Amino acid sequence: MPAKTVAAKAKLPKGKAKPTPKRTNGKVQAKRGAPADVALADPALFDPLTPGETADALRTLIEDKRMSSMAKVGRYRVICTEPLVVKPPHSLAGHRLARVVAYDYSSDRAVDATIDLDAGIVVHLELSKGQPMLSREEEAIAMSIAVSDDHVRTKLQMGDGPQTVLHYWGRTPSDIAYARRSAAVVFGREAGHATLVAVVDLIDQQVTQVVPAEMW
Image 1 (tube, rainbow, N blue to C red):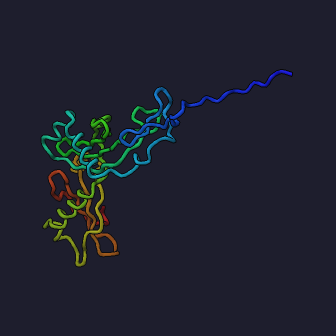
Image 2 (cartoon, rainbow, N blue to C red; image 1 turned 60 degrees about the vertical axis):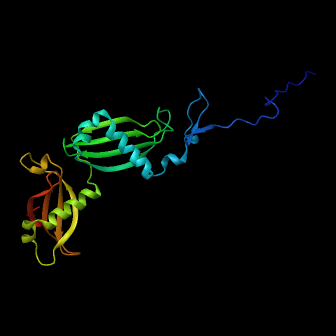
Image 3 (spheres, one colour; image 1 turned 90 degrees about the vertical axis):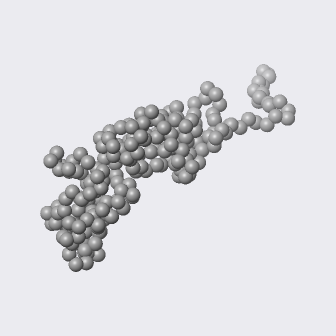
């Protein structure tokens, strides 16, 4: 009767525990040469950015040579900063990343950047003539400008007040808002219909157009 062959299990040397994945800067590092496993991703990568991380991301962006003109003039507005996570096998998988969206008033251009917070470098930068959404600060500024404008105030009816602020851009080249970042402040009675719309140029911070709501 042929002898049974039993496969022996590999044993670790006595006194040594089974190796576990190494962690560095909050990231799980896979075994060298092995494909990255998304199951090993650190959940902390999805956490909101801390104030310190937000400050680091903005500083890294501003110090980038490609942003020297924006940094020098200083006329820009940060729209948002948020965590960004990429999946394996991307080379940045496992890195703590931040996405920064800003608008450069001095050049009328949008800035969309990805910052590697672990390495302290800009790994992606896109500059375009696009129009990102208004920041909350821009909405507040537009409303303040419209409310204090004399021409707007003479057009308001009894009980009218600001209802909302919308991102606005013109549809024709003859419209000032066609090429300049602008906001439309809508006025009306509380819980009532809109009565007036004031267009605010956010670059020069002035009202450029006042239109009855029914003609908007």
